[in-house]
Image (cartoon, rainbow, N blue to C red; front, side):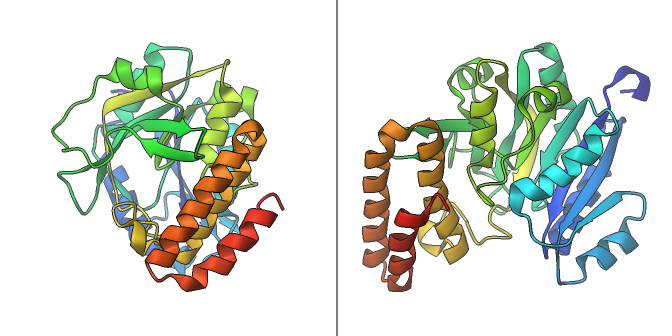
Length: 300
């Protein structure tokens, strides 16, 4: 591809005390076969000398610094605003704990350019540490009755190929680890909502764009995801999920439902109670007061 024939893409990574993961991701971005892109790293108030280490290794990228940890949405919004001020055609929100295939961006742009209705396009995500296992085919579905989300293809063999058209018809959201977002979508729908801090931001974005834009999936765009590197939220081992990850998963299950599907809130409360019982079974007694408290304060 040549620069003159391809739209300009700004790739945005958010770093929080994770310069080693960020460095590995940036190195994989240097191998992309897509010519017309710029990289933005947003540091979310790191205290591990991340800024110094990233600046020294990658002096050619744009490094923006937040004074505090503003979460997934706040960190990405800093980068999105910078890119949109420079007339970005697309922004690629990419988790810093990923490594990308060299054609990952090319396939995303190809798919989103094929259909002007697509506002957000997702990749085929594969577990970094289990290369034979799929994390997600682009995105997934939201269950209004329980307030939970489920990614398409999760834990399926990596050589099982999905039908793109079937996935796109059923998709409620694009997984936030890899989202190519059009400038038109951002102009019309706005930035990511910062009310969640962690989790549910991507489905909130998709819901706000519903009826104006569709969601896309590029099966040829392969991204390897370590998942949970910053939060301890490894999905393959639910019992080992960190306290922080657990807190925001459950809190935002309630918050999102209250915002978009309030009639389903009683059922979602029951699902959170069931989750609390599961924590008791696992002996995670220190989390029980946390869950009880968030059930009454989730909207604050």
